[in-house]
Image (cartoon, rainbow, N blue to C red; front, side):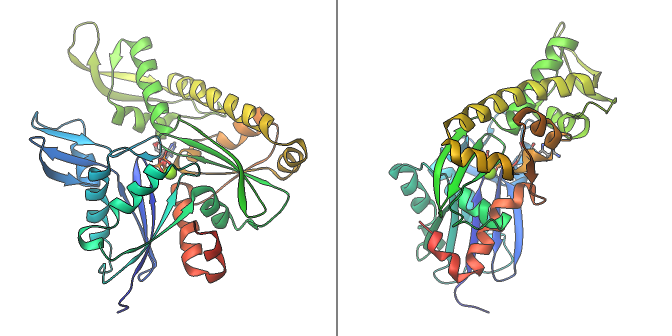
Length: 331
Ligand SMILES: Nc1ncnc2c1ncn2[C@@H]1O[C@H](COP(=O)(O)OP(=O)(O)OP(=O)(O)O)[C@@H](O)[C@H]1O
Ligand SMILES: [Mg+2]
């Protein structure tokens, strides 16, 4: 067994994705931590998500990230260490940890990555960072040094990152603080408004996955459990594709408006190339049914969606770890 192990890590607001170079396996777990009596760790990862929304009063479930950025360093450290321990390989002596990071990261944020990966069992780790858009471009096998310009969008759980790369670097970028969780929230609000019925975020997510159809061809309904907002009593209710899709569409309108504004900020000669070539899309929220045609119509250009969805970025880090010539893109 190799003494030094390498791991590629994409810390997302909803899930952490880890590529273990020794076993070549990718694993993904919820980025969540349950704390008991405000002081001790009770559960981490998928186990914490199971508890979410149904914990006794003395247990709170937290997400250590917000809008794609680390918001609680010590909780993030606890989650990362546990999830690395759950990988197939032993961490070993001085593992190499390759993180995908936001483009416009501040020095404080950079320090947060060093903090979460340099104590306890990770104290001898070697830390490398790559900007998410570069990892995404690598996974799309886009020639990163292409001087003409390529646009990428990563549509995640709490953020949508827009980037243009040209000549091996990020030319322009923007993060819209809207992602899949905002779609869930919009579904909760729409069901409450229309049906006088309060559903949980988890139920809203299930409805999003099963009923959303931006192409408008689905006509379905689901019976779900919730609480009647008029009398506070539990009951079941029926939610339709129409209600769910309208809520998702309203959030998508906000995102596409931001994308159109972003396109206006790109130098005209680069924008022309991008609109001719199409825009590259990845991230878990790109799985929404009917999204490619919706974006194609609204943006008036082709969109190319990654088949790796939420695992796209970590697949890009895997490429960077495996190909020595790509190490030049590490920060
Ligand atoms: N089939 C699906 N339809 C719609 N949305 C989906 C589907 N599958 C997953 N998602 C959404 O994808 C999101 C997770 O995507 P991803 O893992 O890329 O986000 P993240 O990296 O955790 O978040 P961020 O990048 O914002 O920090 C969740 O909001 C989830 O509901
Ligand atoms: Mg992400």
